[in-house]
Image (cartoon, rainbow, N blue to C red; front, top):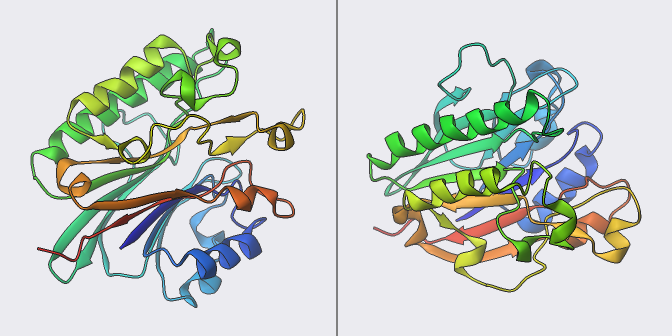
Length: 263
């Protein structure tokens, strides 16, 4: 079973790219971020034609997340608990039904947090605290759980070109990385780092300053796995080639293969 995440940076602008990639990669479940449209405007017909069930949590112009699944999708629920005043469309969870059990997938688009001196950084840290609570509660079920999405977190120096330039950025500040580490300390596994410790495994390249051509990248798109999911992890891939397509997103897909049909 292949589960993937991709910040598409406007699903309607990248629909042709998304359809092409879905046909090539053949993921079973996909978490999309920054769909940048309300639910009614999501181009579901083109995706449903490929055999996917579609659930969205959209927002006009900004944010927005979606779950696509070739398997039955149940208990779909938008929004991250812990702040009733938060209206951003950044979180969507669902339970994917398999022949021999279920897997819970949470699609998330974590706040960027910049500029650090504004209210945006406390909002980011509070959001991460809410995610920590969500994870604690769901780990009690002992079912396979996958947190997948654009975390806007650079976990370690090996995950960014020229880390010294990012020291005070919200994506790489010590408080941000400590919050990310707190998630891992609950027992979650960073899927990519479970398979390789090689630096330079980037998932994002800015549109500015020729970042893609110079490979000035970041790794900020992650799949974090509960012990029950990590035990069944087989392979992880980053489809960097998609960044070279015409009018691409600044992010690329990340996917992981699991033996989730097994007992």
